[in-house]
Length: 353
Image (tube, rainbow, N blue to C red):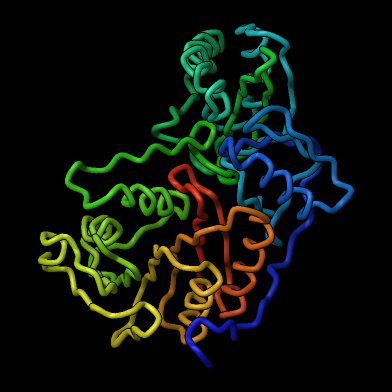
């Protein structure tokens, strides 16, 4: 079969029963229509989905995996709509927050606006409102865990969303079920200035989403590694890295004692030792990149996969479904996709064998 031919079976990922009620989602401003298309496709053609404003979408129900966890690609954050306050009334909002968080051992309050030009102008007011709400909670505020620390899985994530009409939508769900632990999904990852590229932020955010990361001595293959942004982030964790790319790595990354550089095509490389993690961030046609990930799954060459896949300009939700089906067809048992904060015209795919 010629290189890039799609030989893996397309195995659709079974969906679970949609969560009930009205849900509010936020996304990249230019992904609003993609999110609407995705929700309608996942929830059924007659599903009630509407745009509230740029970067905010409401739906009746939330799509899930078979295990009940939320399955959505283009949303950065989502919440079940429970309360609505018509204006910036800290006391009324605090009352709603108290009601939603009272049964949880801890809670994290996040007040945010969508990540749009208009929404970003409201963020300073959101920060001030969050402080006033916490003050209004009185003794209950002692159970609050800051967004930086993040509540445990048993804690509640309470979101207060500033909308363009001046109203506030409020909802809560367990932190373990949240689409993102970051306010509005804004995961601004910090990296050291000596990182070879800004791409390091992508892999840091992906690992934060996955909830685990390579440990010291674990073997990581980085396909399409040059100039070494992802490899650098893995080496910082004291992992062993096999970087696969015909191009050169930044000299200090290439000389790192934990680094081995294979100047080969990602499509012809085969590992000669057991691999724990497969990483892939290539500017390549997405269906062919997905086929490559499927091959790694079929041959059981790695346990965990973290990859960025580029997207076309149109019909993005349909190509995402196809990419997932190809990777799943390669034997990866759990395949998830998300357009993360540091993603642009791409998605991040996580797969576990």
